[in-house]
Structures are given as structure tokens and as C-alpha cells.
Length: 106
Length: 121
Image (cartoon, rainbow over all chains, first blue to last red; front, side, top):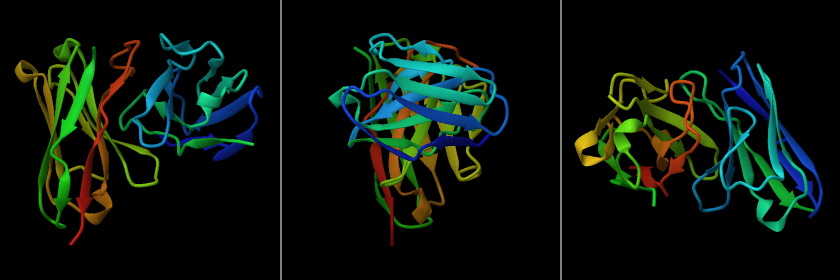
């Protein structure tokens, strides 16, 4: 299953709302994870089963979608949100990742 | 506190072998499927292999099938990755991880800090 994220990079300002899209090459129901990765650090899980917020993750993060199209939204960007974001399908092995979206400060 | 610590990385020549280890603590290791995920320098994430809690389900990415072998020892809370026939393109930071999946719909994930494998002559 191929996962395609868009955009590959995104410039935004503090307080902006941003949306990242992830498309699967075939249906994956809602078995979609979203991760945040900061430079030199391991990825951290933000969202699982497409829309469930992991405990401790700020509520400004939200996920939606099912089937083949999914989105990650951040409602009001904070300085600590500038990072790279990856989607991952967890429906069938190999558990493929999207290519990543680098979120930068404008 | 949940901890996942990888070890065993290093420099290897093409065609040689390395064995990665992952020591887990702070959670009931034998309740969870475990995975290896790698990240080449400056690149994205690539799932490498996964093993179910009881070793009954094992899967590999096509890029490593036939060369890498995943295993676990639940008595030692440890995960392993035997890497044979290493190639230059296997150069990456290798993470040990657990995460939600269709086979294991848990609500959490844990990743180690990774161990670096460099394949070069």
C-alpha cells in the first residue's frame, strides 16, 4: 500500500491553522497513524485509527478520514509544532509511511 | 517509565552481518507486537520488519526479505534483528518500536532513540 502525503513542505506562522493530507493507494479503513518528528529525535505518535488523539497530545491536533483519504490538522500553530509529520498505514504489512511533510516557520 | 533501548549498530562492510538488539522495560513486553523501522540519513521512515507478541506472525519489507531475520525473547524483554548480506542502502538509523495496528489496536506507541548502521567499504 502506497501512502502519499501532501504537501511535502509547508510554511506557516504562529497561530495559523494547517492541514496535511495523506492518501492511500487502496482502502485502509481507519488504520492510519500520524507521527511528529523533530530533528535528531524519534517519531512520536499523535493520532491513531485516523482520529483518536493519543493521551497527552494537545487538542489543537486533530485527524479525520477513512478509506483512502486522511487529514491531520493543527488548529493554532505553536512554536513547538514546527517539525516533520508522517502518516503510516497500519492496516496491512508492510506498514508503509508517507514521505513526510516538513512544517516550517514563515 | 516505558523505555526502549537499541544497541548493536556500527560500521560494517557490504556483504557482512550485524545483529541489532532492543531492550524494553516499563511495559509488559510479551503483550505487544514489536517492529523495526529505519530512517536513512536525511530521509523518511521505512518499516523494516514486525513480529507478533508470541512470534506467530512475522513480516518483512521486500527490501530486506531473505536477508534480515527478526526474533524476540520474551523472557529477556528483548527484540532482535539479524542483518545478513548488508548493502550500502541499508545504512540508516534503526528504531525499535511498538505502535497501534489492525492486528494490535493499542492506544499507545513507544520508540527507542535508534542505533546507527553504516554499511561502507
